[in-house]
Length: 144
Ligand code: SF4
Image (cartoon, rainbow, N blue to C red; front, side, top):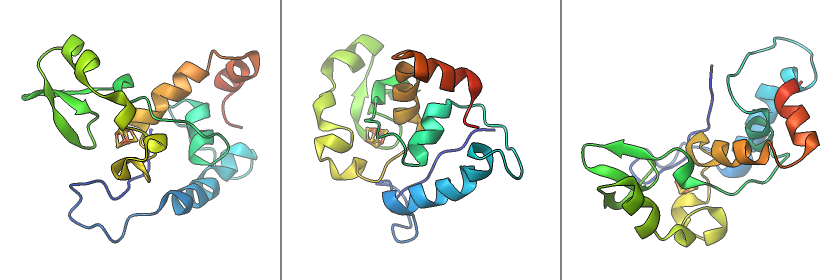
């Protein structure tokens, strides 16, 4: 099982009922607490424990949009599958012509402010998994 929070992405027909980033963190703290504290039902998620910690607000990750790119009949979608700023016909073109500085929360892009989607943030967690012995142990051991 995998999980990711929705948010009011650009094309969502209902912009009023998605959670803000802070509300998302509060919700995931409740959902994942039984795993983290080894109490109650232990859901098994096929995801990076570091990404789950990010959802709980314990780690602040920036997005890595090229970490799980979207390819469809129009080509490689820039920058991610949540919204499109155009398409590239090859992966090289996608990587080399996308202005990556314009995306992710720290860029200030309004479309990215409430996004905590796995497509952009789980690749960051995967990269971070080998950045220290502690993170390697968390990745092996899991959230609990
Ligand atoms: S934060 Fe990343 S995954 Fe989310 S909308 Fe922005 S570029 Fe896409």
